[in-house]
Length: 286
Image (cartoon, rainbow, N blue to C red; front, side):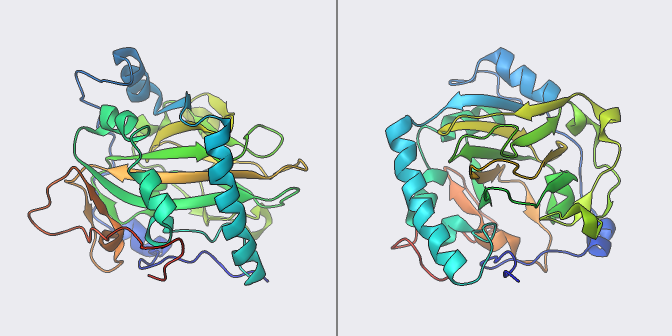
């Protein structure tokens, strides 16, 4: 049996703890009036649909370099008995991921959605191996996270091509405007990498396949319903998630999520966020 997801500092709340938390889980529309990289129409589309997709960040040579780096890290974790999903808190472990979180080709998109001050909240490689039998069931990220208010955007960078055959993400357009949705613990038969499931999602909006070429990104709200099927192909499907929030977001005490937050052009007079420094090398134990 492979080892489970390894977080550097933080712990995951239980279902009961999540339900009892006093969190502000409503969507706050992006209020950037003069975006510099996105158009005003694209910002409006994000507010309406909860996502944007298909922005080319890296050319073939650049993403091939990132893929080769991930290949080496994956080889190490598999050899150690971990699963392909265990490379979490990656910006604390790898200088290369820390640099991607601060990358000048990525940040302008996030600034246009969240504003000039950001917290680099989290990072995680999601890798589905060929013929992988696991799924990620329908869920909202905000339902997992001990954070408030809900002002978080995830950048999903395609390390490999992602399509329907190899288990690309799927979004329910507009579902972020429904607030937090009722979820249940996932059934064992779902073979879910995570542990929550939202049922009957078609009632919340149109389902969209998020097919991306390697080097492209999508962006989605933490309240957007999303999932992915198992990988039916002979090709791997890997993406790197980079999570960002606004500086007024707070981590609920007791789970240490605040320790991983990196200040990006942001002030933090209360000293809430840990603001860890760049790792000195590409793998550094936290």
